[in-house]
Image (cartoon, rainbow, N blue to C red; front, top):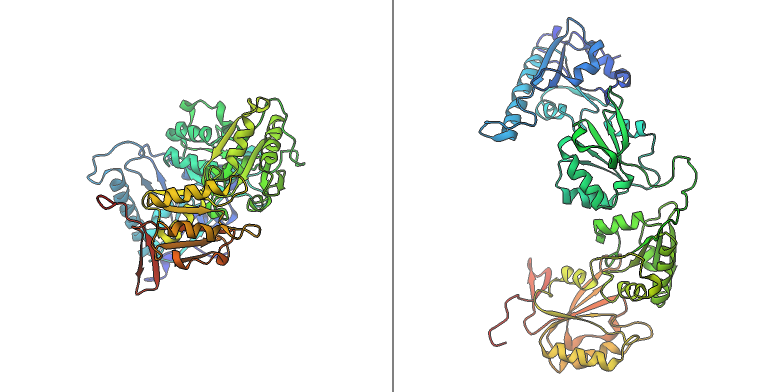
Length: 516
């Protein structure tokens, strides 16, 4: 064992600083190393409120000897107000500086100092404020401890995360909107620092659709421990030393495969937009809906973008069976399933939301809840990559004549071009449609100058992403496929080069000329 004692006998040699994790509260959960370091230290320091009681000292009490030098680090404030000129934060900063100076005096005298910390010293721990002020000046060792997160899961007896699940740890002091977004988008979660924040944490869990899953743990492994469903907890009874837990969704406690939901009532259909590419384009709300779904329904290419989750069923299909896909999703929901219909981009822009809502309007499905969650649409993604070509009024038109006659498309192109609108052109071409881009260019040149900038955004967000800017008169239909989106500028759209010509930026001014 490293001998931490009697370092003060070495002339002029500074002492060593230890941050000692004590675990969640039960003294028997202290590590062997923590006990060794406390026993060998000259000085034992611990934080406490002004009433003088210290949870950290109480945990380690039987290891503190009469000949230990004790340094209580008493907070000047906890949750109350203060007349300090720097406010609450200023009062604490001054306290940390003064406490660090007291410990430094012991270290300079050659004494070994053990700073006690509940849980783990570097996990929301008070010790870290000493560490940041002293570790660069003195030899330091941090002794990890069992965190309240691990203790809470153990006391609940429920797995926190499994397989590819993601655990998110949040302080309850975050704004409710932020808590809601993060809880909606993660698999498992632990929310710390409840107490006065419990009301908004409960609200965030409810708004994110996670309240029924949430568990409550108070004073894990300590006297007065309490566990149960968070929805049943009286907000007035919640202390600071409590956490909210969203356990793993993978499997029930039996350890067997996930059980089929009891179809006591209809499920729901959520139409989600995944953006133009992978996970980076998902919103927190969409992530949450995809994670919570029992079934995923959609075009196989889009369904494949969603991470696999044990127990979740995936129903991929061809891109040309939108009505059948919508009715299939509604049928699943009628049997009590939670269904996510996966759509690329934004589901309301040339995508699946219309098909689902049209099917849901039938009497057969009128009782099935349907929600539509927005996503980043291809026009906005391509525009952002190019600069800001959609900075003023613009029109969005699909060049596909599979669901509407070309004559209608031609009329709309002409009208939008005559109105000097920037145009975002979806579905410009495919293997079976090769002439539409050329016809569109001819129509647009009747109203636009040949040097009008055109952005070709292909596979935006994907591995083959490319963004090019060409002139309308030089637009080559052979360079455009189904994965390309075209943005045709107005008479006001500008192309500039920045950073010595290395960067080309397209933008449309928000101010339109008088009489234009």
